[in-house]
Image 1 (cartoon, one colour):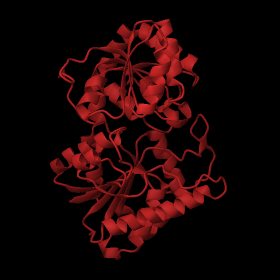
Image 2 (spheres, one colour):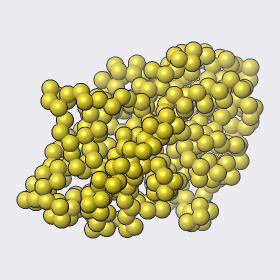
Image 3 (cartoon, helix red, strand yellow):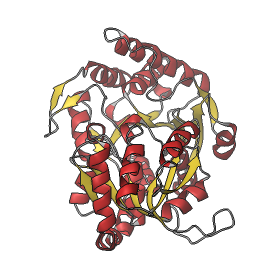
Image 4 (cartoon, one colour):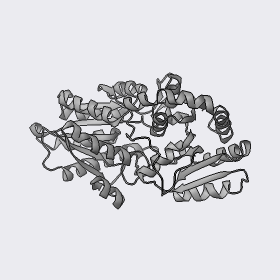
Length: 399
C-alpha cells in the first residue's frame, strides 16, 4: 500500500512534528508500505533533505488569515480549506483508490479541504483517508466534566458532513489522541472516532557523548517549543523564584534565539542561577541526549489548553523516567493519577505557584524518581509510533 502523508505543519526541527515523521518513515516499510511526504513550503532546507518531503503547502495547521470576531472563523475555514484542496489537487493528480492519504495533524479545515478535493475525483478513484486530531477547537469552552459550555461546532460538523458525501464510512478513519477528545469529537462531528496512542519517537537510552563530551546531569530542564500556552511568558519568573529558593541547582533551557536572549538576560542577574542555554532547534541525537540528562522536566502549561489535549513533551519525559511538573486537572495530571510516571502538580498558572511546585519536586526527587522509573518501558511500548502505525494500517486494511 502507498500512503501519502500530509505533514503541512512541518517547517523546522522545533516541536514534535520533525522527529515524528522520521519515525513514520522508518517504521512504514516494516508493514510493507511505501510513503510519500508532502510538507510546508517554508520548510527549512535541512528538513527537506532529511525527510525527502515535497514542500507544497502554503499554510500550517493552526495558521489564520483573519481574526475578525464576526467573519474570521468563516473566512479561515473556507479560504484555507479551499487552498488545502487545491494543493492536494496539484500534488496528487493521479491518486488511486488502493492508496491512502494520512493527515497526522488534522482540524476541521483539513477535513473540509480533503472533502472538496475528493469531490473533484471520480468516485472509483478516490483514496482512503485517515485524520488524526490532537486538539479541540480553541474557541470551545468546556466545564470540568468535559461537557460543552459554549462554542461554534458547526464548522466541524459541516466538514464531517461533506466527507460523508464523498466517501463511504469504511474508507475514512478518524482518530484522536486521548479519551476525552475522542468522545467530544464523536459527538460534535457525528462520525465515529477511535482513540489512538500519542506517538513518542522511539530511541534507545544511551551514554553517548554529546559534542565530544559526556552530558552531565541537569536538575531541571525546559525543552521544546515555548509558546504562550506552554508558559513562555511565565517560565523566566518561575526559574527566578526557584533559583533563589534552591540556589546552585543546574538548569538547562532551550528556546528560540530571541527567547533565550530574554531569559538569559534576566536569569544572568540572579546570582544563585546555574543555567545552560540552547538557542533554536537541536539535532535529534543532541535533543535526546540532553533530555536523558534531566532529573525534572518543567512543563508550565495552561491547564485550559491541555485538558482535552495531550503533551508530547510529557510523554517523552514519562518514557524516560523523568519527574514532571505539570498543571492540575490537565491530561498530564490524569496520567500521573492513573499511575503513569511521577510528578508534582500546580493549581494556578502563575510564576509563584509553578515555582512552588518545582521546589516540592526538587525536595522529593529521590522518591519521585523511583516511582517514575517503574512503568516507563510499558508507557514507551504503548505510545510508540509502531503501535500508531499498526493501528492506522489495520484500519485501512478493514476497508
